[in-house]
Length: 120
Image 1 (cartoon, rainbow, N blue to C red):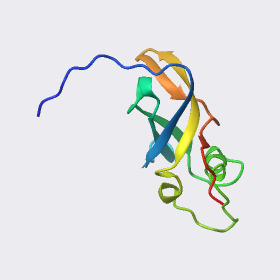
Image 2: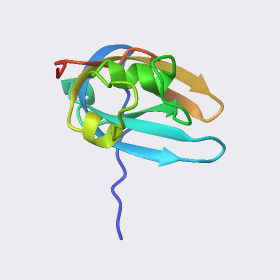
Image 3: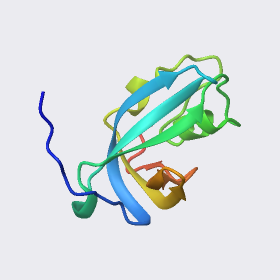
Image 4: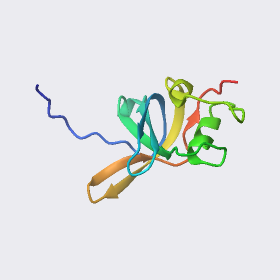
């Protein structure tokens, strides 16, 4: 297998548009859903950013519940498959760069993922 060395790519702080391309789940150390958004802006086209939400409990008051409810109604007692509900949806979101000990990374701002069209 071969890999190509590429120049580093950065995502500028600000509002972007993209598409939710997948949802992945992890259980350690807690139950989390990771929502991957592929940026469609010209300067950062094709870059994927990840937004994580605890998903142990789904309600209108949880981070995951609030995110899903921005994309449509979910009646109480109804089950929802987040992948079917979110994947393929066009969105806008805000990103901020954060510097950690591991480097500089673009992060999706909490609460900023919004659908470009809401399905009723």
